[in-house]
Image 1: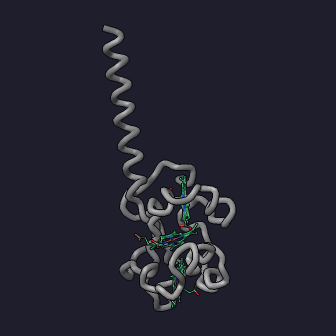
Image 2: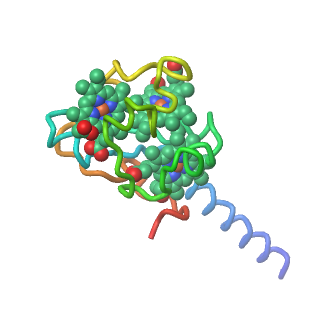
Image 3: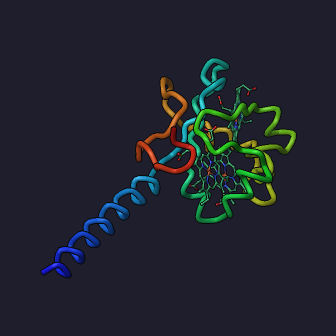
Length: 126
Ligand code: HEC
Ligand code: HEC
Ligand code: HEC
């Protein structure tokens, strides 16, 4: 009897964990501090697409992206100088900055933040 209860409890926990992870998987990040004000569409950053290709520390340590949505002050001149997105989107690691629309693909009016899976419960969520 006690064992059955424990197993059920464990299954419930496992189910909760899967749900939490799935919401992170689909979360895109919108960056729109400056873009729309400067006449460009907001930037959609597909976080998960990148997370499965690179280690977290590449961006969150070496490239200096803070692990908190909206916390990073990224400008186009930084990117062209090879910082932030520009560390890879340089025509070598990934397609280059000339492909404006591939990054500036959001609809006007989107606010900086997580879009899709609303929260990840990760360290950046407070
Ligand atoms: C290609 C670069 C890149 C990689 C790799 C990457 N991230 Fe991120 N991450 C970002 C950017 C950009 C943001 C958004 C920052 C902003 O809005 O200012 C972000 C935001 C976050 C946030 C805050 C938003 C949230 O979802 O709560 C967390 C937590 C996070 N990343 C965790 C991770 C983890 C864990 C990994 C590795 C599994 C990872 N990141 C890999 C670039 C990256
Ligand atoms: C690799 C992704 C990427 C590409 C490609 C890209 N941008 Fe950006 N751009 C960004 C990010 C990220 C920001 C910062 C968004 C924010 O917070 O408003 C930004 C911001 C901007 C801004 C806001 C003002 C400023 O100086 O930061 C302008 C204007 C801009 N980009 C123009 C362009 C143009 C024009 C192109 C094509 C020649 C381009 N971008 C290509 C990612 C990109
Ligand atoms: C650590 C390297 C790295 C960084 C940093 C990085 N990217 Fe990427 N990104 C890639 C690679 C690699 C691809 C895949 C390129 C390909 O398919 O040719 C990619 C693809 C993309 C795509 C297309 C996704 C798809 O579904 O095809 C977008 C949009 C994008 N990046 C935006 C950004 C933005 C915005 C930033 C900065 C906030 C950024 N990236 C920072 C490496 C990076």
